[in-house]
Amino acid sequence: MIDIDAGIAKARARAEKRETVTQPVIFNDAQIGVKMTAMTDDEWRAYTLMHPPRASVRLDMNASTNLDSAVREYEGVVLVDGDESDDLLSKNQDGETVYRWPEVYDSLSRQDRENLAFALWMIHDSWYQEALKTAGKAQTGSPRN
Image 1: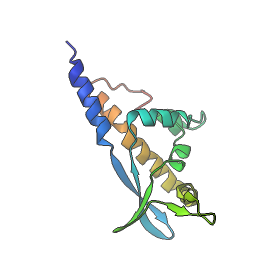
Image 2: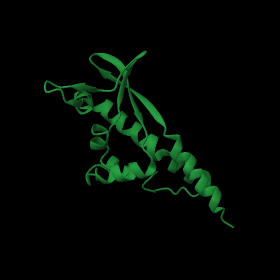
Image 3: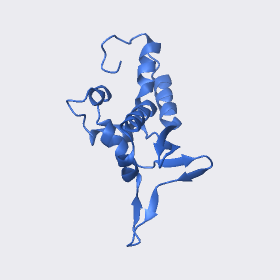
Image 4: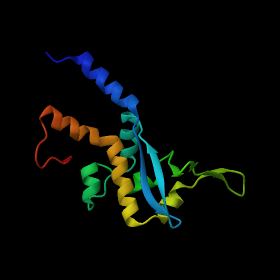
């Protein structure tokens, strides 16, 4: 018999976990951390639907989303340098609050962008591949392999 209650409880516990990653990057000639916190499963699904995969990009097809635009537009990114942090929110000349992460992202190297894409995928979807392996159902050639 399938234990429905146990399955629902595990899914809820995973959703509450909200994993965080701090990915090192080079910015302003120094290594700093880019901290990202996972969305809930429902938020992530809705978010990735707004960033459809580019057909010519294998990474996008494997992740089922355009990871480049997903990272660039990700809300709540925090820069970390030792004990200091910056939520990337600042006031412009008109006194409006602006989110500077897209500007920072655009200034990063190709390698840093790729590492951030992988980190974002890891905090949202890597659990699934591990769950398949644990359940003994991982298949060679799977789009998530």
